[in-house]
Amino acid sequence: MRVAVACFEYEGNSLSQKIDGKENFEKNTLSYGENLIEIVKNQQIAIAGGIDFLKKNNCKILPILIAKAGSGGKVKKEFYNEIKNQILNRIKQFLPLEGIFLSLHGAMICNQLNDPEGDLLLCIREIVGKNVTISTSLDLHAHVTKLMINNSDIIVGYETYPHEDAYSTGKKAAKLLLKSIKKEIIPTMKIQKLKAIFPVLGGSTNKGFPMYDIRAKARKFETYKSVESISYFPVQPWLDFEGVGVTILTITNNDFDLASKISIKLAKEMWSRRNDFELKSYSPKKAVKKAISCNFKTCILVDAADSIGGGAGGDSAAILKALVEDIPWIESTICIADPLSARKAFEIGLNNKSNFDIGGSIDKEYHAPFNIEAVVESYHDGVFKYNGGPLAGMIANLGPSAVLRKNGIQILLTTNAVYEHLDEHYRCCNIEFHSKKIVVFKNLMNFRKLINVDVGHMIVNGSGSTPLKLQNVNWENRKIPFWPKRNFKEIPLMDNYE
Figure 1 (cartoon, rainbow, N blue to C red):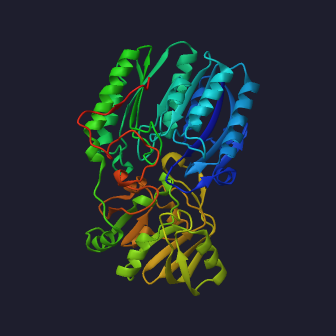
Figure 2: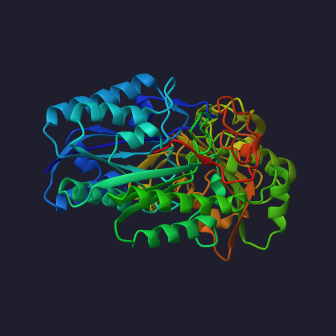
Figure 3: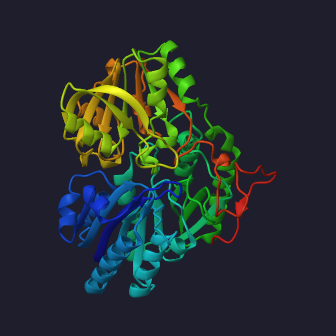
């Protein structure tokens, strides 16, 4: 069985000012042809899970490319078209095919194109026709569109957040692809959307959160006869266009009515728990003051509005300002992406003191530089390996990085804004967060893996391109009312998504 495989992953954010092209993908992962197989070997990402399953089942793997670049604002349309054409041309060369497996994120956007993944799937379908099975794995925060549904046979999303099941999701999508190719099933998909977007911070699938219960019910439904897969998509909420909403997607073996009933049932369940997604948060100054008096040895301050994993620039100095103004002698640390300040630190030399305008160099609409006098403490190359999560084993690069000290505060200045898993980015620059009273993280979920009897956390709100208060965003393109911008007496189901 001949199966073409490709990975094209990027999470967009309409509020972010970042526009990423080929250079950004090259900093992460960009490779073509047979190199794909070698790159993903022993990795825990979705494309690796799919390839491994297909190999074990004696499929002929026809590798196209891997283009993977985390989160940001928009992908340059020119680069998107370049990758799209590479995929389409290779598929034409590989014909005839029995199947295609794609690892996508599901929330990519381009300048001048809001649904590039739907566009890609449509163009693939036009080439291969209806008799070739197309299976797609998506992130749990995917925005599932009509184009994606109409031009895929199988869509499977991650189950967990923090993301720990990318590999098994790819494997599951490949398994259903193979069952479809062998005519063991007729995959039938039905999605149900809500006119609602939920705060990402409350969307953990860990015990004690609403998505834990949704996950358990979805897995129970999968034990039913004819039910092949159930995915839930709380969605990337910072997408400013129509059709974005919380989604349930059910796949059955040729039973549309059953798929519809399950999708509606789980959508209603998610709607009933909507308020549980909203968590308590504090301003930077209040969070800093409360952290000093907390009972934990170390308190993590979650810079929610500047989450790199959500597409923000990682350049807010709001918490740094509060630390300097209110508790400068307390041992603390913060990481800020600021290539200009990092370069200046290298220029002035170790152990020298200078004034730095830190932050506000990427998401300039939301953040202003904060001026402080600090000493250059150390230099680092910023290279590290992820030791868990969906990128386990993959190499990340903060770029040339410098550690400054201002009294008790260590400030890690990086050239690149890099997705935070745990504390690998601090450790590669010789910062041990357990020795600090306060540590700032710019991610929305993975910090939970660090919480224990000695480590607590507080959520910090503020301005940025990953804001907590979704109802307060000045949305420009959303015309349909949605929760939490508007309250509804009845469950707000989104129509015409079959």
